[in-house]
Image 1 (cartoon, rainbow, N blue to C red):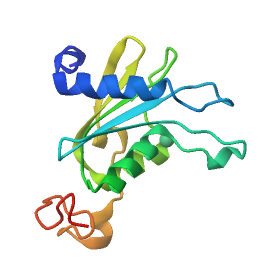
Image 2: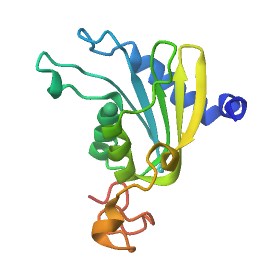
Image 3: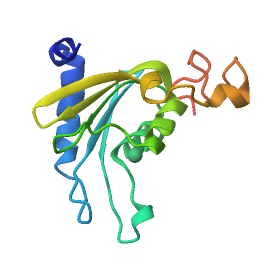
Image 4: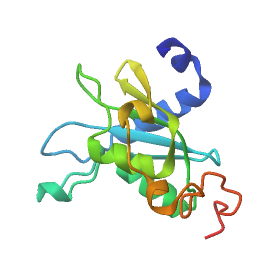
Length: 158
Ligand SMILES: [Zn+2]
């Protein structure tokens, strides 16, 4: 599974983007540099790093930053994600970011977790956040604000 991800050119693009922004991480407190890259369903790629703050809870995760970029650019749905971190352990998205991804990603969206050497493991969002609560719980099966179909809500439709 990892080998196929590593050979997928679209995953490689995300990995490169995540690596680039990881180098720019503002992490003077944790010294843990993270990069996240999201490919939206439009094909556009959004990448962000973690941005810490002296008032610790005000810090922003890489995934949250990338999602904000995606929404700000007019995209609404996540197609694929790469998160890259440091160290020996898998740098999976934190609980909060799993829920943030859940808002804009289908449960079968792949989240590739990488380290310095490349993709280490691939999860679906459902594996990262099983039995999750999402927009359909509030809007019903027909979607609402985060309608999966996308035909009523084009990326540049506002
Ligand atoms: Zn997070």
